[in-house]
Length: 396
Figure 1 (cartoon, rainbow, N blue to C red):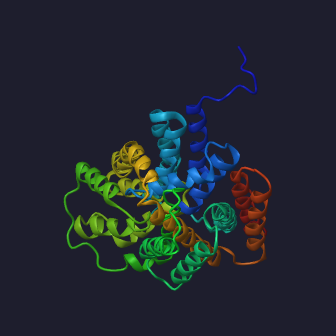
Figure 2 (figure 1 turned 90 degrees about the horizontal axis):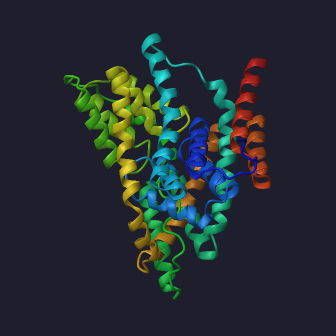
Figure 3 (figure 1 turned 30 degrees about the vertical axis):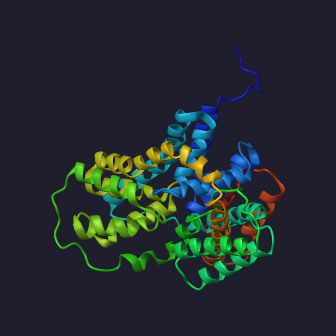
């Protein structure tokens, strides 16, 4: 029997299709992932509202691990229950893991990474446009009134001066909440938290090289698949802050303590995690393959992502309590404002790196304008940007 064209799609199949596609095309790091998810689940599919999206994003940033991946897992849970939780996470992580495995094999076989500069010349400005469009939409839900705008401007200015984003996040939240109380306004329980820590992920990327320059391993420990799995399980369960803070953990464990990697290998592993789509944490897949082959790659990936599935499965009751608390509401509304300012700072910094000439500026502005006007799938814009990048280098 042929199914009618307008027959409803089963929620689990819908979750699988969406996050499998995002896993293949979500270039640009966590801020871009968040922007693309918002585009899909708020604007195109209308699973949830912007306010609900901010709630989910805030909750996932209260737990350790890769926050954009945890957001994908949580969205799958809301759409299709516990099966959706598992399917969304696997589909979002799986394509990146497969790509990183291929690159790790090429790295071990040929001793170098493929050259992809021509591809990212066109993709990066499109990602800037996607983030700008998401920032505009979320800002309309958060920045209402003079006080939120003033706090956001202050946080943005201090971030551009180089202050720690975590300090700015919570400091901005406290400042906002204090101002509301002094102003005599009752807190509005509207969102749990805005975009905490997402901005810090991309912001810290510019300093990667400086973080890993230093001493090599003093002496290598005997290799063990169990040690590999447990080390990544520990990192996945404890890491706060950003996907790029992961680098410091990896260097301490795999370069300094275990001695299984060199600094150069670690830099290459993090680079692969950055320029492939999907989670930055697939750096673990690359490292696992380097030190333990295919079994090592699988165990490393499982170890670092397993805590995220467990945490997201446990947090719905906590989310409901925080959402309704009259004590946490003003502080978390302030975190909304501060986090949005951090995301704006990320946009400025990414733009400085990606917008090199007239063509890249045109790609970024055109992407933002198209997404604001039409409900087009951002995947097509990324593919168009990649094609233009290839064409530009081919013509030159």
